[in-house]
Image 1 (cartoon, rainbow, N blue to C red):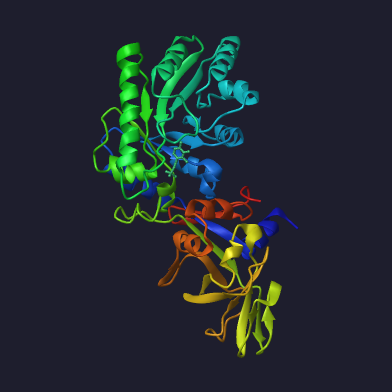
Image 2 (cartoon, rainbow, N blue to C red):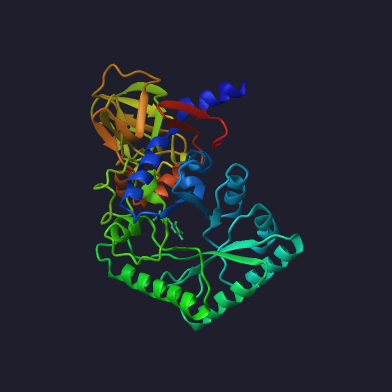
Length: 400
Ligand SMILES: *Cc1c(COP(=O)(O)O)cnc(C)c1O
């Protein structure tokens, strides 16, 4: 088989359709709500929340207010560094084995430990480069970061004095910005900006970029213009993909558009007689004659097994119920209401078909899975087709 045929087979079985125009539009809609001059970091960790990090970064290279990209692992950073010119920062901890490659490639690690500072400084001096870093401040997430106190101040002072180190950014991360009550996030912000002020006033150190807002912060705090004026970057993740940070905080008012849809094609249609069971465990038994279609996708593609007997798909714009258990690579749906349905017809598992739409939030609620998690996992095995400027291109370089 040629590579083209292999790609076509994968697309027939099922593919994620990623709307790059929607992603650019979502950033634009958010950017309009920010104080003028504020830049955006596109958070494309976990392969762009399953949407495909490389293609997204390429689509954002020319957007002037996109400062750069944030990822979670060194592998993600290297993959992007090979194709992008804008700064790439790593939000989590980078292990020492990658420091030299980071310094050479100009990738910005998050640095909050002295051993990391020292190792980076040594490499920078040895290679004649600068290690450009962002420093995370733990104001309530309890994950990584220096503390916003005298010890934290001493850390920043040490970093600022090291010849091989360039502090490009200082940031913090909200634990609870996606809740109805915005008080805990504002308290974190108060601690963070107070600490940033101390760095400026007591150390006389000017850090060029100060950032705190995640998606929920952009929608709730920065848009309400309660943000302190010294923040100049925001980090947009879930809302860039058109999804909601939580049930309480949504992008609906801004008109954000989901960028991912998931389609498959029917592999088999058959009549099932009363008393016949469907799928593992025989948890569904037909009580009357019905028409059943097989869909060749399953939990091996990240489609939740918890949707067994609960989820629905769209065929010809109609909702069709899942019958019995979702298998690793296939599941069955009730198509009795569409008597002339045929193999190869399109099945929409996520997204719009005619007047009906299945959202990541709906599938998440039905399967007990967080919408962030749902889209990440859908990105694991399925190939992607990207839509940009009205044309669609398949991506043979995507998964698998
Ligand atoms: C994941 C992450 C983000 C993006 O979060 P969203 O809720 O998707 O906007 C921002 N900052 C940090 C540090 C993160 O880990």
